[in-house]
Image (cartoon, rainbow, N blue to C red; front, side, top):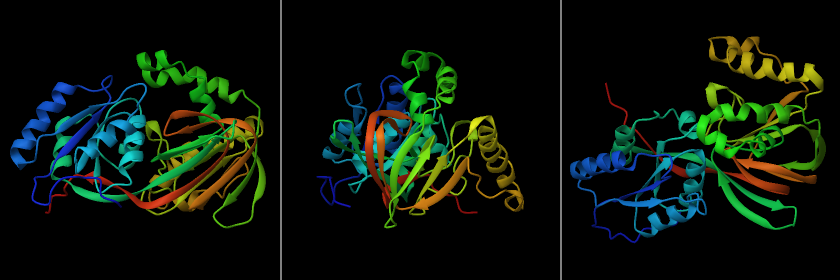
Length: 331
């Protein structure tokens, strides 16, 4: 990693808070930060707000330019993704202060939610854990390429269409309930993804699918385990491909995800009771995935839509992101 800090070697450590002003209690955050600054002797913390135009990449770069050793990201999954995109190529660590409807990355890392004081204490006194980050080049329908990062999942098909059909104002008012009608619209969409793909250095193949998910983490909201073997620090993506044919296919997917992944795999010896991949839902591991679509399709990264893609190339950067984790008390 390349250093971004301009802090001198003998200077005290410093933190920065990148926050979504719509989703956080800034006064409570500042109070907790002031307490830890006093306890640890760190330099004064800087604060950087996100905006509609800048969901967090620019604000995080400002924090790094100011010399932050730790960037505390306070917001939802979109803010976390944007901050991680900026932080991963630096010597700074990312500390999570979850807020919003999803908090999927924090949940997958086993971090507590809705604990401002605990999150700030972790930022100032915790230990760093190296986790993976997904880097992706998205080619849109005009053949323009944009580069991004993600920490949870990237997807084409059902989840991307669901996001595209979701009313943003309704989501702000009632959270995940806003997705219900969008899910119904997506499920009734019988169109297929037609794609050519290549996993790692294997030969290219053609496929038809309803949904393709590239995951760095496995759990979704409500503790739904979509990718049972995914881990944020194993150096691999887990790729899920859904090919349901009618109601039977969707039943197979629900049984695999809700019953086998959600119940059997969580009990001792339950793995022996699970079935092999069914045609409706299959899994594969890879470090790199290249996809070319026959027609442009909606794509999402960590729950945010990124427009229509005609192609993308994504790779896992193993250990490419440092996350500040709570100290484990010795017994």
